[in-house]
Length: 209
Length: 209
DNA sequence: CGCCTAGAAGCAACAAAATCGCATTAAGGT
DNA sequence: ACCTTAATGCGATTTTGTTGCTTCTAGGCG
Image (cartoon, rainbow over all chains, first blue to last red; front, side, top):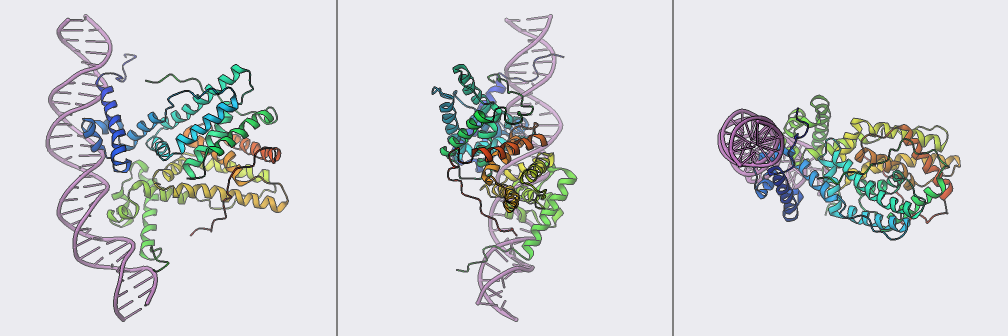
């Protein structure tokens, strides 16, 4: 059994994948997501529909792939000199991007065509990585820091819950408030509550393909 | 302009709707969600496929409708004599139901075929109603109670986030921990933090159809 | 450097689904 | 009892999804 070439990351396959992804991005902008069809994407990408059906299964899984790519953060969070400032800024940007109509659409798409939860897990990992960067810097400065898990529960989760389940009522002020409460909790609750049960830290992910 | 009959809630339409919903429930159990098709549902329900396409648009929206119905709580939360006990019990049951494979499937379906977020909002409203029942009882007893919004942010949102984005790592102990932290926050943070900005209370919903 | 192999894409026939116009039924108001 | 019209049924048509087979090519090997 050859240990390596289970898939083919390079060459034609890669070109086809990129071409298809590009076609999806273009067409979403031109005709809208609802009007998208697999044959339409195939034509634009210069491939046959069966190629798409075989690689992605259906339009949802393809859209999910594209959405996850667009949800990947492009830069590290800004360094503003303090944990609080960094978290505030990151949370505000997070809300801006995620709560916008296109952001909501990407989130939905990412969750949608994702039988095994891989893509959803990737989204969660992106947020955790960004938070970890902020926390690592704060540790460098000697600031006390909350756990990543706490921030996910207290900041990320409420934002995503609102995006998915309660359209509206979501703005920068709310994001800051969540950060305030999370940081406050970290300062006052440490040791005063049952320690977070079994919260394995998320390890750094490789930079992906 | 006649003020009422924009739709036809009763009579044949209602029978068709019920028949179709029943067909979906049966077939999901028999052949599985993935094998479901609109024509299949139509045949079982004794209607023509075009009826389903016209009323629901596609299979996803139909599944979303069915899922929301099944996510509706059937009973009020148990009254165990104290806010803390009631919340613990409710949160545990919530996790049990929502984190189970069928529960996760219903949540996904409910979110999936829901262009305008109506169904998702309904799910959120169900949880808020249940929480309100528990809180109202606690008020009757004279206990201090947190706001519904706080419990949604601190208990419901983290649970749903994990269900959707992080398969695994979700159990009754975690649910209790969330309740503990939320109640603790309510006891210690009141007045010690910026008041929750612009968090309009969710008004009592009419008992639905 | 040029064969081999196997995974991936192309092609085309086919099967299944979704859409649409038109006829028919029946809810709900008058 | 009648009328209006939303809703359903039905069938023709279009579009989408599937499948077997062939062709191409990336990557390993001699």
